Every structure is written in structure tokens, then in C-alpha cells.
Length: 366
Image 1 (tube, rainbow, N blue to C red):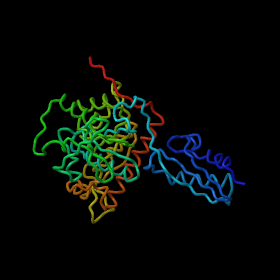
Image 2: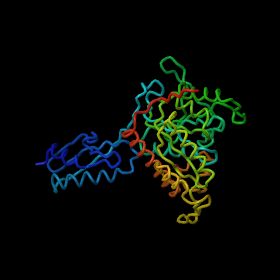
Image 3: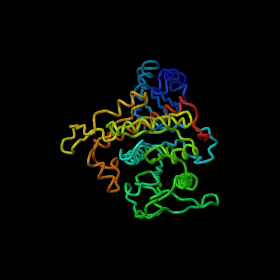
Image 4: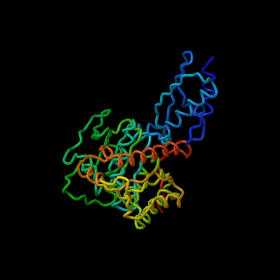
């Protein structure tokens, strides 16, 4: 006879590959139902973007057949509850589980493109996602989402007027470019830029989010320090291109986040413009900016490598036309961004399980 106890005992032999513990210990098995030989249960993943869900599903079925009954008809339902490791009192962005900075040591590496497509890819997998454009001096989200000239609405939240993020492609997003004339240069000193960023955190009604992806300005300046001092950052995704000049600046960004004063975990590194693939020759790869420089840097610094994004015309066209590449029809582009998003979500879950809780950084100036 098949019993819940036997099912749980069998599933206690199925390990979650990233977290290194079995599903029962991790409390990931829910709603076990048994009718004769039919066994149904739900596995609650740590992210809907988990790239290992089929591996886990097959391992569960094998465990039941091998340890309970070969005749069992096993149905494994997969759902997700995105993990979080905030221990900061949740005073700011209280309903945001994970705050992810997308950063680079230099401009021109496609950081905004990566951030926008990462946010949409996570949402397509079922997560609740927001995108904050913190590139105060060069906001690009209004162009990339096709909302140039539009303005966000105000909403009343518990008696306080707040800015409602705009919504498109399944995510919420906000940018300084939605509040100022795009023809007007933003000429602000560091403290003014930092103050604007703080308002984006405190005066925008982000609501319930699994991930808030923040597109950071290039470099390692005031805005970066302001952000980590204002909200508990789960970790940083570093964007680079393969050539040496970009890799040198990426190292500086990684060094800033890893410094004892800041100590923000590195979720991983993604190599953008990794190779050129022409539409008419989708199997061909031309390494215009060098080959696998980002991959080698990740190995050298012992940080996760999240993937390679090709240099293809559809990505550029999508950004200019307000239709991010992940929403298009090019299979090469979609595959690259989906794999990158899956690896990012996977490493966020591992960070939450294995590293000290997220908190606001306190930097003492000397």
C-alpha cells in the first residue's frame, strides 16, 4: 500500500542540486494525495525560472518508482515561491523579496539591454518583477519600452501621494527619463543624483515583487554607494563585453561590491556582445570583440558565469523600437536571454540559502 509516509521517505532521497539538501528537509514537498496507485504532490521551487525543474521532476518520479512502487502513477506539480533573505526590518521596499543591481565598470557594454531583458525573462517565467532605471544621467528605459513622452500617474497609498510605476511586457518599470524632458540634459552634482535615487526608492509604489532589477549607471560612484546604504541589495549582476578594456573595468566594479566596506554578493557575470551571429547564418559565430573574455574573468575571480548574449541585429532593433529582444521571435536571442535569466534566478536562490542575510550597508567615512 502506498502511504504519505512512504512517499515522503522516498522524496527525502531527492536532493535539490543547488541547495545541497533533500526536498523534504527543505520543506519543498506539499499537498501529497494518494488514490490507489495514483500519487500526486507539489514541489515548491525557490524560483519559477529554475532551469533544473525537469531534472527535479524526473528524480521525484524515479524515487517513487524505485523506493515505493513500480506501479505508481506519479504526477508532480511544479510551483514556486521565490526565496528571500532580508533581515533589515523591511522599512523601505517592504514587499520586495530581492533587489538586484545590474552594473558595469564602464558604459557601452549593453547594461540597460541586459537589465531590461532579464526583468522581462524572469516575468515570463511567472515572477513578479520591477525594473528601476537608476542611470540618472543617461536613462534609456523610456526608449527601450516605447514610452517616450509618457508620464507616470500618481496614486494615494495610506494617505501619501506616490508615483505608480508604468507597466508593459509583464513588468513594472520606472525611470527618471519619464519625469523630465528627454531633450533636457540632466546636470546634477553627485548629491542631487543620490537624492533622486532615494526618491525612486521611497516615493514609487512598487508593491509586491519577487525581483526588483536596478539598471545602474556605469562606474563606481555616488549612486552605487547611495543605493547600498538605502536598501538591502541581494546581489549584483556584472555586465561586460569580451575585450580587455571592458574586462579591466568590470574587475573594478566587482572589486567595489566585494570590498569589506560594501560587501554586496556578486550574483554572477554575464558576457554581452559575446559573438556576432548573422540572421542568415544562425549557426555561425564571429568573435568580433575577442573570445570568451568574460568567461575567463569569471573563472579567474571564482564568481558564477551567467551566460553569453550574442551581438545580433534583432537586439539592437528591439531596443530602438521599444520592443525588447526577449519579446521578439528570434530563437537565438530568446534562448540566450532565457538561459541567462534562469542562471541568474538560480544563483539568487543559492545566495539566499547559503550567504548571510541581506542588510543595508553602513559605510563609515574617514
